[in-house]
Image (cartoon, rainbow, N blue to C red; front, side, top):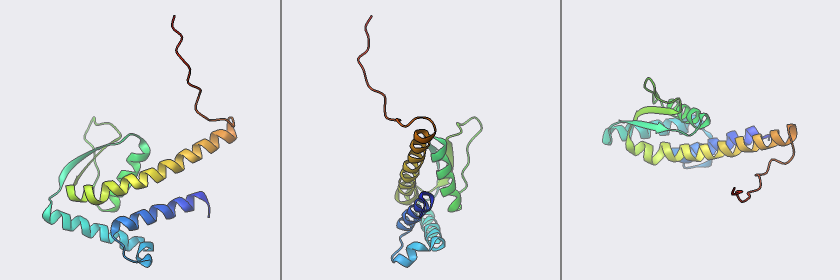
Length: 143
């Protein structure tokens, strides 16, 4: 299994975890997981009406991940004119954000960042120079 396949499998397991899957068979059924999460959204809407959320993300990768998650659950992401590119707005219930969306996003984001860092280190090491370790810290020269 290559690195990309392993990453995709990890991401699917994380999604299954947040959808409330009860058996290993359910964990592998991505469609069923998505539907369970959509049901959670609907349940939250009844008791906790959607409010406008502003997500300020540190980088393009995180933004792409959050936008994909929102769209996957039929939540329309948007941003206002002149907002930063890494800002994502959405109308969603606080309960769903706190209990499902944000914890799932953080876990998926961590896996993706680890994967991207590994690819970057390997590429630099192979294509540019083998030592990509942090530079040595030295005392400032006072002058």
